[in-house]
Image 1 (cartoon, one colour):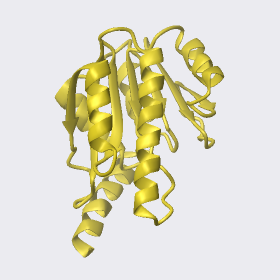
Image 2 (cartoon, rainbow, N blue to C red):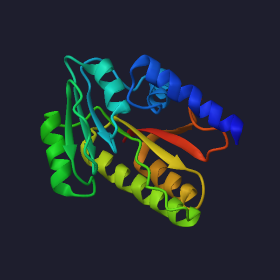
Image 3 (spheres, one colour):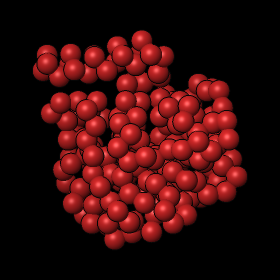
Length: 195
């Protein structure tokens, strides 16, 4: 337990030292390096954005020509160059607001959505897969063919079914586990392109 805590603390300390809002930024940065997700001028929707680490990273990659829209059910502190919306991504009206704020379709939809943990592993896993499904539906509504979709997943019940559904609906689906993921975690990331 101590080793994984110090591993997590390494990323947390580094995020703080470099001025990032969260340690999760290093996960997106690695995925971006490996998959070339974000380019200057791109339009990015960040689902489950609070506290804003991924939006912060995306804004540095795509601005000033691009746009970043962050959406979360929780409020998020303002972030320069990022349009933050508070709402539920399962709501069509919220997705309409995201599309309007982007000025059209997204070039990338990134999701670091995770449930608030209840302590019941089965319930938390089911909720995690439900959120991943919501993110996939949102992405399919926001992305043109070739647009990138990134989503956090936890391996366990429902994972294989979700992976099969994603492969049927997306092109070039891959699973990546960035170095900043906690050791021993079942966390992984799906990276795919809209078909």
